[in-house]
Structure formats: structure tokens, C-alpha cells
Length: 262
Length: 234
Image (tube, rainbow over all chains, first blue to last red; front, side, top):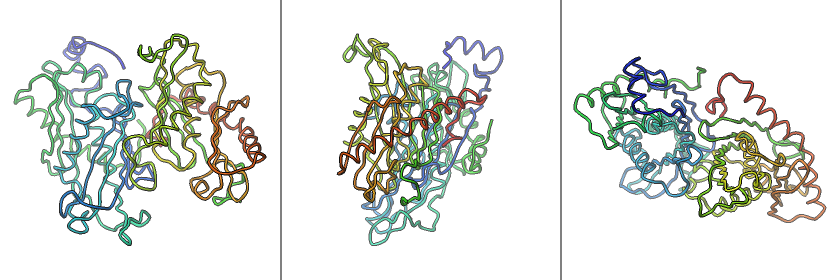
């Protein structure tokens, strides 16, 4: 990682209208996605956003439901110690818990999965575990996790139930996916708003804001992070960019089943 | 002939790539049959005072399985007893290879994440860890490698698949150096002394294969203009 100060960032930006890594303010880093990379999972993907890498895998279980007539859906993201020297093994810290909860809420609010269909009886049905491992980290794990998670959900396979048990070799011929969601995370450094901050940029930021939008342009999740404040114009600018990016990013997730070289 | 058609000393397909993670000081990705394993090495850095040893480096090894790595049910989020044991025996094997007195007061951390498992993950992890340590520039006294031998249909064979492990009469993971020093040895099953000797001999006979595997991975790493991208390899 290249280290630089806030002053260096601001001076560079004011002179060249570019960030230190050469990007414009509203530009994502390179995105690469590969579907179905884990054969033992019931849906999987790997996503890279710059140098942040996330592997997502789905496991399906069958049993009691938490809520009547609704399948269980559990999202968990692990900031693996393999990804960064500041990530430690053991129970997740507040960063890891916040990350899991942000992504969980976005998928849930967007009703990405049809949970009604995942209930087979009032109190019995499927549990979908969507687990993600951040395996390399250079900032913005939120957007990278949405990319990996959404890509994995797009190839989810629900095993059939036979004799009250899962048969993991046979799959239900039905579509359980009913919405798509992406996330755009912004950093505010002084009065400059940038999309998809690197780790260094987020260290300099006063405020970070993650905004999730679904395919119908509903806003399905917001998280403001950091000690700084945010005014209305700044929020408007972020939401505009998030909505503008949605079709392009969704195409990356759903359209491209293979990785393209740079 | 074995259930998947292999000869008794034939290994499954193995693919090794090094330098695939940006943050880790050294890294390796191994595909061995259906196994997919990622290893990252951090350090040497200063060990925390509570665990430091001023004579030598402290080695920390953590073997973890992703919750979706098995064909069966969803795995637990916390390491189970098996993972704790594997972390320990791998740490001991790797500590033997690393020239620990070159790094007094240091800490070297080896992080192993099994993304997809199909039998033989501990020896595959060992091979990837050796490659990741070399990638990190950590001084080793020798190259090491490992293979799980086993007894299937009353015959000693190399590199048990998950199916063979489940039906077999014995599983013998072995990690050794090129010189033949045994660094990791376990047996789960019942075999004769002669069978054990033959298992060790068969593992020793694969020395050149693993030397080439590791050398070729580094040749690829340093002959590439594009950075090594895991998304491409996985």
C-alpha cells in the first residue's frame, strides 16, 4: 500500500482532479467476477474490486423456521486474517459484525430471495447460509461483499427434499431469486466525495457512506460510518452516483460469467 | 486399479500458484484433486512481548475450513477439534523447516483457508504453506512436501481421495523434507510395519515431482507481466 497524507491527497486532487491512483472521483476500481467456483457449495462466486477479494459460498440446510412461512436466510462475512495484518482470528470484532449486518440488511430489504418459497410448511423449510470470506483487503469490503454475495445468489441451487431429508444431488427446478442489489460506498475527504475508496483513502476519510440500491432503483440500505458529518447536497450527490452506477454494475455481476483480462 | 482409475502411486491433478494475494507477505493457492486451499504468510514481524522468544522466531499456524468447503452440511464458524489439531501438527512441521534462529524475537504467521475439501487437505496445506513461506522470503533449511498414503483394498496407495479415505483401512498423512526427514506423521487405521515402510518409501519417491511443482510455480510468477490473479486461477 502506498502511504500518503490527507494534505497530499487534497493537493493532488485539486491540481489534477484525479485521485492518487489515477481514478476520477466517481470511478470504481477494476471489477472481476467468476461464478460457481466452489463445487461443494450450493452457489458460489469470487469477486475482486481492485485489490479487495471476496469468496462467497452458499450452503442450504433443512429444518425449523425462525418465522412462520418464511425460509431462514443468514448472511455472514468473515474478515479473514489471511486478508490483512489488522484482521485477527477469533470472534468477529465490530468491523466484521457491522460489515455482515450491512450486507445482510441490504439483501433482506431488497427481498433478493423469495423466502416464502423457501418455507415448505408453516414451521419447516430451508435455511440459506450465505457466507463470505474477505481474503485480500484494500478497502471497501462492503461493495466487494455485495458483488460476491449477489453473484453467488445468482447461481443458487436448492436441493430437493426426499424422506424429510436434503438430497444434495437433486435440485428444485424453480427460481428463488427475485431481485438484484448492488452497493456503492463513498468516502468524504474534506469536501471531496469519492466512490469506492481504497484502504488508504478510507483511512483519510472523515465519513464513509454505503448505499445499496436494487434493480428498480429503490434504496435498500444506507450506512454512514465515521465521526464526520454530511450535508444534504453531499448525500444527494452520492445517491445520484449510486443510481447511475446500478445498471453497469449489475451487468458485471449477472452478465459476465467469466473474467476478462485487463 | 483404484475407484477413480489411478495407479497405486499416482497423485490426483495438482496445480500450484504463488504470489496471488497482495497484502500477505507471501501466498500460495493449491488445487489438489477437488481441494482448493489458500495460504497467506505474514511476517517476520516483532512478536508481542507476552509470547516473544529472544532466541528464535515464534511460528503461528492457523488451519481453517470455509463453512461451504464440504459436500455435506454447513460448517461451523469456529474451528472444530480437528482443525485445532491440524493447526498444531502443521505448525510443528513448518517450525522444523523454518530457520527460526534467523529471526530472534520475531513472529511468522501462516494462515490457511480451505475453500473446497476432498480429502488430504492437511498435506496439500503443507505444500502450499512451504510455497507461501518461500514467496515471503522466509529462510527454510530445506523444501518439504507431503502426501497422504493409505491402505485401500489391502494395498498401500498414495493420495487418498475422500471416497477412498471413507472406505479405506488406513490413512497415513506424511510430510517430509527432500532429504527424507519426517516432519508430520499420523496414522488413522490399522497397518503392518512393512506397510508403513512401503508408504514412507512411496512418499519419498515423489520428491522430484514436488521440487518441480514448486519451482514451476515460481517460474510462472516471475515470468508474468500481469499480476497473478486468483480470480483467473480458481
